[in-house]
Image 1 (tube, rainbow, N blue to C red):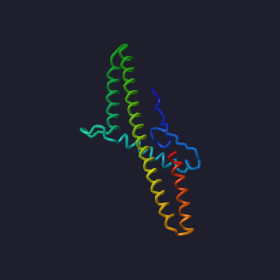
Image 2: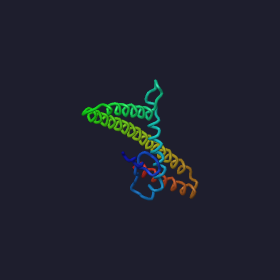
Image 3: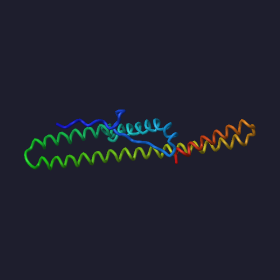
Length: 163
């Protein structure tokens, strides 16, 4: 009998994705948010509708395909002889292709999300730059200078995140 494989992630998620950056302190502060965003992106990818006619999601289609492949495998394994090994090899190849396609779809979705995130950060940087110009043009003294310094610090953090 085969042993049941242990889930690779201690928190019950399907995959473990280590996230690290140049500044360990900042990444330690941001890693939980990024992990949650990554998990949400994967969930959204799996729950995205890929068959608008039937209204089925990527996850449902993959589960149905897996079910059909396993059913086919069981039926073929009931047949005698060498054809069993050939059928099993075909099934394993088919499952590998399916897993690869799902992984590629997830990767594409995550890349799209990262591009969107970086664009949003760039828009925020532009907005903060304009705010800085507005504050500096209106001479409010020391309070304005302190606020502009805080904006500069935040801008540096945003640039580190997108670097």
